[in-house]
Image 1 (cartoon, rainbow, N blue to C red):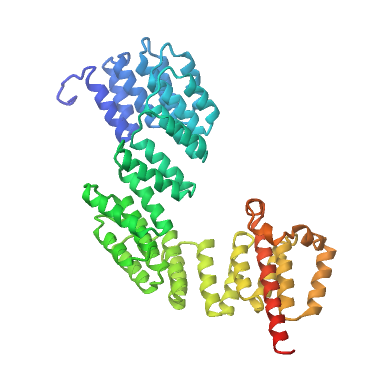
Image 2 (cartoon, one colour):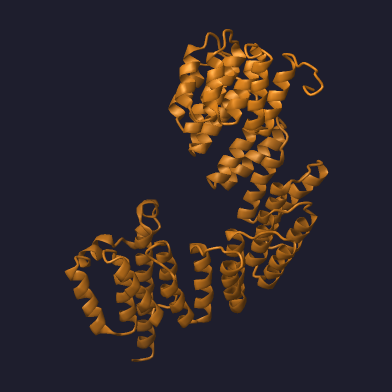
Length: 492
């Protein structure tokens, strides 16, 4: 246009700047700003409003403020654009300063500020603003519901939801997602049924994803199939997220054939979809099929990620595919340069433990840096509880004592190993060491009654080390009681 000497006007630049904002191109936006100044439109109200929006979208809110401050005439859109820019860039306090100085406000002004406090998790301030609003629309109510849902305040979120006179599909989706997040699956299904009955809003893809995830967790195959039929009958075009939720539901319900059909019908598959299919075969102990999917994934040039190998190694572990699991554990590091995480080690430890291969486990322990990955403590504690009288258990316990000399759990683990092997001299020696280090008293301080083990207080406040220790001690006591009972019945 400019190359052909066609002069732009004040209608041209708002369109151009909006396109720059839509594609997120700050470079092109700055070029447009330069042309605006060159052609003398920098003081045009509509042009300045578009520039403020563009700079805010591109994360240059300070440039937007310069445009705002240089304006001789400002309208409501100017103020709202600046406030919205501050909120979306995380500067809620500056947004509030502008909000308080506004000569007039509309619903957008109020909703922007409420959403800013919701983003901060400051529901006290959000609620105060909400109560001062002279007019509230469905967006205002949705902001409050979403805010309480994010902090898992189910009671307040439901209170605001029930108070709404008009709800849209977003209102329902926020509540469905909240119940899913809080694992209140029954309430999620009740709300979905109410949504269908009241017909206030038609379920969309997000609604169906939430409910399908609930079906997967509760293994509700019949309801999951009904939702699949609903998708077909109502012309809902499944996207990747909805298809993956459907696939996962069938897989967790044990119907891998239908899961595979959903997978095959997906027009586009991301690594998440492939991972879901591998996981689906894995949890149903079809390890060979999980490996076939991975090979198919490689052929399609889909780059696997950390989660892919967690699914793959878990599938090998569940199906007892020792050699395959060990191979892919190495392949992950050699070919794809993915460093093992706790989840990968956990699968391999479980796989080797099942096969009773203590030497590779010991070698794996030597290769790992437990001091850099404290969570691996739990992985090996689990393996040692599975094989409490093995040399591996002694090796792990001594290594952990070396790394965590003030942690009582590895001492108790080693004590139990010696007791189980009948090495009473070593047991006495360990007790003396613990007493010298002041850990003997800690044993009695950390003991809890059996009734407390399942209590809400214990589950909330008990550390992982405490829970592992108690489980190990109870397992040892049960084993000793069973052994004593067997000896008594045999007359020994």
